[in-house]
Image 1 (cartoon, one colour):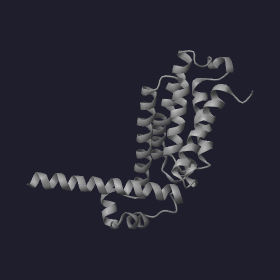
Image 2 (image 1 turned 180 degrees about the vertical axis):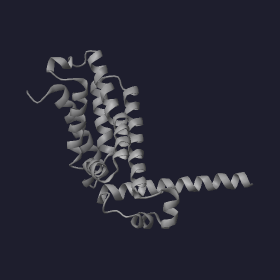
Image 3 (image 1 turned 45 degrees about the horizontal axis):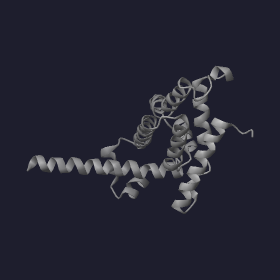
Length: 210
């Protein structure tokens, strides 16, 4: 009986922690790190501030966990796409579609907060997470495309795999700044995400010249 009660308490504790992370993400991405207080987070989660501090030492630790959660999901999703799709065109479309449908917030806000609000050591940790979650899967996609001759050798463009990976991610990021989540209809949001993903595929693979 004691063991069962302990398991139930552990489950409830984990549920509360995930609620705090999920709610904090919405608040941070909407208002920015500096404008959000732990009191706001506690009230939005319907928990006391002592309960909040039981799970997280301070606001910065909450924010770091929010970022880690976003990047863990992204890493898993992008790796799955590279495993389940073989062509460069399909991978590029699916990665773009994931970004547009699962990153409704303007990521510029998150990157700004990381740079200006977090301690240097925490910035370094998050940078490693970003490399593993975003950059490395895109690098792997491009390397495979070159290997299987789906795209030309990048040195013929006086470029590199790394530079092209950053270019693709920057292109996606620029499209995220006009959030599809401002569109009220779910069907229209999906349609717009697909339109943007197809546009990225066209720009990268076919270029803009007719």
